[in-house]
Image (cartoon, rainbow, N blue to C red; front, top):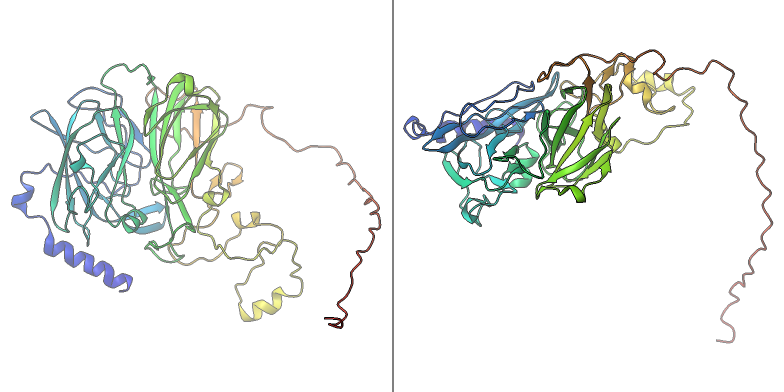
Length: 457
């Protein structure tokens, strides 16, 4: 089945199996979101109070209180996510986006979640990290029947412990997660917790990866590791918003990994401690300072630090391919290859042919190269001093003294005070050192006795 027929089939399935108005009448109205901007924190209008998180390039699902129960409504459905300006991808998600909305509750809350399936196949939802009744764990075929296309199932349990969690399918999960089905979950403590500090900024995002051929819109779902689009909350730099904080804010960043490999997340300019995992808050005696924390597959990490250094500080995955856009993986290395006399001959056959890679790949950050429509460039980010030569799992922590309390607005580029920026050396470079190669002692040739036939045998 080709892609066009696949989605035509999906649309027909949705029309034929859509949830009826009568059935929906008892459901909370599902909140939908199609934009890409980071939504402001959702201050709880009812229920127990808490300090809300900010979902990078995402949002928090509103709820309805019903007899003391917090009711949410997730709609699993095909969506189109603009991963960066002009680069759109067909995905599956929840409530109009991939990832779905963040769910925020408070320790002890009774939670009821309606899940309506508008996908072309069955699904389930697993509430990753939660302690709950076994039948609510969302493993299709094991703890429940899968949710058929067009049907709505209800999950209900108590959020028993505070922490950082996520949700994702446990039904055809290789395909459904490769298409973007996932979401974040935060359970806030119901009172002052001895292991959970108060912070001024609390950000969260999921790590996800896709394999999208240049010029196409639908991820290759069978790719195991060789993805070419590495993203946070299904956005790639420069499409990922910055983390904007006030100087000396205490900052918490929560990260979950639903890709097929680990990601060492590295923060510039500050050291942090890992204060929580999906197992709960880390006791202070078990914490230590880091500038990079590895987030393995299926794990959550919660880091905290004091933002006491002004500037625009990079935060990124330290696997260098993961800060690139769409790139070929079987391209031969051309560094040092002499193209002279060859380019004109090739251009007679391929007029747009350009020499690339003979001096490294940095030129690609500035080189205008024609690409197929809907292709995210390999190096797309721009900074105040030129190309950032990055795209993918990368953004900036922006620390400013003048940032108003509670404001998440982008303050623009940081201007370094005079005398605090790297500069060009004005003198003459030293001559290149010439070191004679040490004489190699003549090794004695090994003595080899050649076969001399089979005489005597």
